[in-house]
Figure (tube, one colour):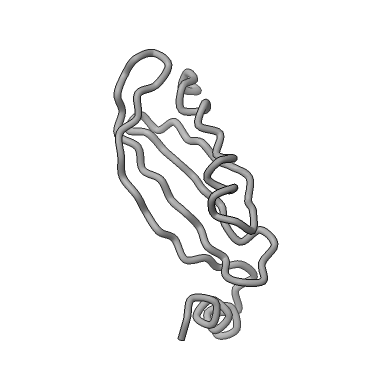
Length: 92
């Protein structure tokens, strides 16, 4: 089974309204304050045929989160990630 077939099978058998394969990446990012923080990036793939196929999230070591806009193309979804959200103050 390919990814799209697996996602469709999980939806059908698990009675799921949404499901995605998640690929995780780890890296380091220097924020606007000049601090280098560990960052975890997750790429959600909802499979072929989904207009919002890819969605990208990133979270730094302090818990700041950046979420992008979903898109049919992975490169566009990565480009639309709101990286600047990792530069802001933490909410209380």
